Length: 120
Length: 110
Image (cartoon, rainbow over all chains, first blue to last red; front, side, top):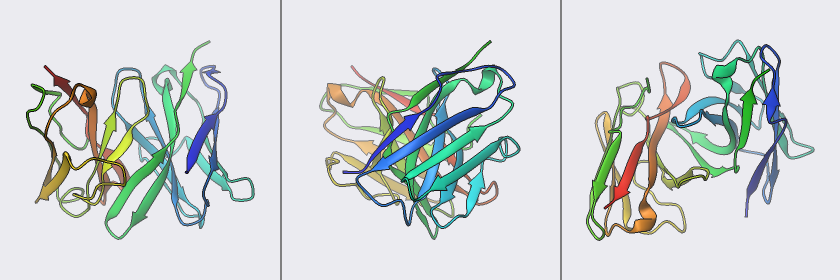
């Protein structure tokens, strides 16, 4: 059974960089679109980015200038960095395994989520 | 403002059927497959439907999906109290070159 687990600080100060790591167990990291999605408190889902295991990336245009995503295949992990955070970046951050190809992109496994609060 | 449009809420009695709509455009639903996710209170989303109408292993056939043009629909029959959740549609948007979701629909089982 594939499992994903987010880890990282639950509190980040304004203007600093949010860093999260997702550890994948029970399956290979190859051949998938490793993705980050967030959900502000009481609101809907917001797609952040993906990195294909082969190295290509794609970012939400509204966050592109602040986001970096990377994959470490040797550790079966992938990571998210979001710079210059503000209170608007407070959310539950989910990592997910993306399945993608010709005209399809969906998430078949999700982490439990990690609440990140931006506050001084 | 979400790229895909869903009704904020729907409700129906136990045992009844409910449908949830998801409206988009030619750059997203019109040209790509749609997925649906269920988010029970306090939990992570779970994949319910992929490629418009396919159910992952373990998802009961009470859940179904369809697509026509730039809209998609999730159907749930034989409603149960345990179906109370938020439901989200999602797909890829070619113009934005980004994943997109609907704003979510809260299902209440009366």
